[in-house]
Length: 438
Image (tube, rainbow, N blue to C red):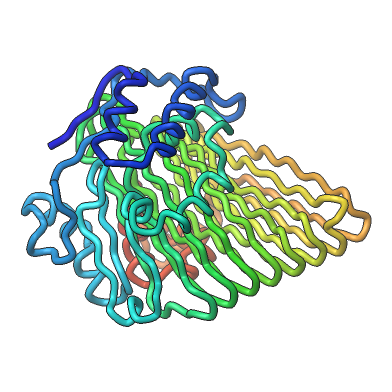
């Protein structure tokens, strides 16, 4: 077992890189990122953060070998993923699975059919070693390490994550999934994900996240870079269910070329503070970007989430649907950006934000930045904040339904558009996660 913890130093960065047997350029990159992390302050947007960086374990490797058969995975780790339902899900409907436990991927497997199609699906550390040219072509080009304090931290200590390359004109019929588990008190997890969907190809990638609850904080600071090439399609589905002691500070960004489609299906249920704004850079004519998200904030939770759509080319289209729910004094805030540049003629963008507050103590803000610099383009924004309708409650209760069940039905109807976009198994899991709050 290898562990690097407490105060982060340049020597510890070098130790991690040496232990991973990385090339010199990656060690240099990590050190540059570390110095930028030390230099930068917390972002000037979002909720205030009170993070003690000397608290965390920055690297923890549990096992020396990544397995491709669940029976070979250490029993307590296998049982953790079995209880989550990942092992059964792989058998039923997934084309491949990666499972990360703390800092490293402990299990990885992909259908033989996809291997024959030359699809690359592995952890990012493996990609650095096996596909160095492809890796360097896409690493740190879409999300730069010096963008903010947490992209810099990820650059310094990144470990694990997912690397996917789908060759041209290849359709993957079954989703690929990665699952990220923090299982230790004061753990920091910093995976790096790179996805490339080449011309005319299609991919659905799914991501799950969980952690047990401890009395002190953990930190999850991931970076995701997605490249959707000409006429390609990518869907990225996330159900985040971090425990209430986890800071989830994630940067996710996709660039979409001519005729391409990027879809973010983003569910935010857990965490202490969540700051996540999946972005699409619509770089080619007729490129499309969609983001459908929910954010559920309960007691002592801040969900500061939304989306970003940047239109750089003509005839581009974007659509943001954001559903927020706050209860027991939670804070569910939409923060987003839509920018239509002068060159993005005949572009179209729509933003729809709806929030339900379940009590008097809960809070929600809508903080949009909408910029349209093209006279031939259209940008629409609509936002609503409401409480559960007493009339709807009365109607349902008059049919013999309890108040708790009636609230549940109203909430499930409210997030219906999001649930429709999920595979059946994920929709069932989402229902289960939300019902614990009613």
